[in-house]
Image (cartoon, rainbow, N blue to C red; front, side, top):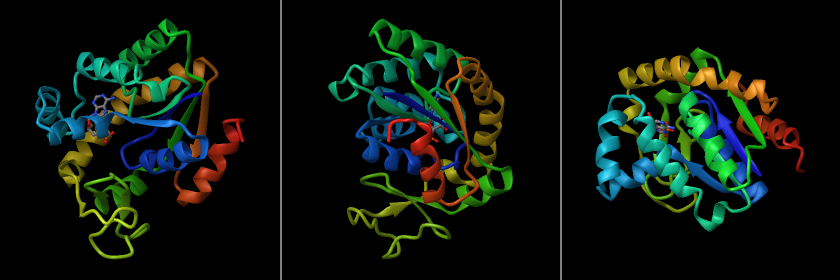
Length: 215
Ligand code: AMP
């Protein structure tokens, strides 16, 4: 099954993707994580992406599409995967459809996690991540058991540079300008499932899983 999680930055895509990928045994393909890994390794891709990420802008489609199409060639995506943070533009959505069609596959469902603006700003401000396994925490809603340490692997927690206030505003502006049109693209294909993401993590997960019709 190929599933896309759509939502603004801070909507909880990463958290829901973690739950869904283990519940449904699907590879988690997160474009932001792939860029951050490349940046950590200082590859050409990482250095290119850095310029855009630091400013809250989208990395150009050509670079992003190539990275994702390469990623889905890996064996763990043979029978499906969960896309998180991709696609974010119509060109990316169309390129993904084409890439999957060439492999004889297709997107099954698209889950749009809808969250109010006030809630998004509140969440993004307190977000921290594990630098080793990328598990997300929130100082108010999902604090780690030991401050500054990951519950799962003990890694150090850090705040992303692009979770600073000005960059957050730019990322939200980009989302509402460039990513919202793809909601209609998938609605027109009758693949869209809309979920109210203003609620707690487990409540949102409990709505998503049955709506996919696999469990
Ligand atoms: P995320 O972790 O999904 O919030 O992504 C962090 C940053 O990586 C974004 O603000 C963009 O600069 C870049 N990025 C991630 N996914 C994409 C994408 N699908 N298209 C373009 N840029 C992306």
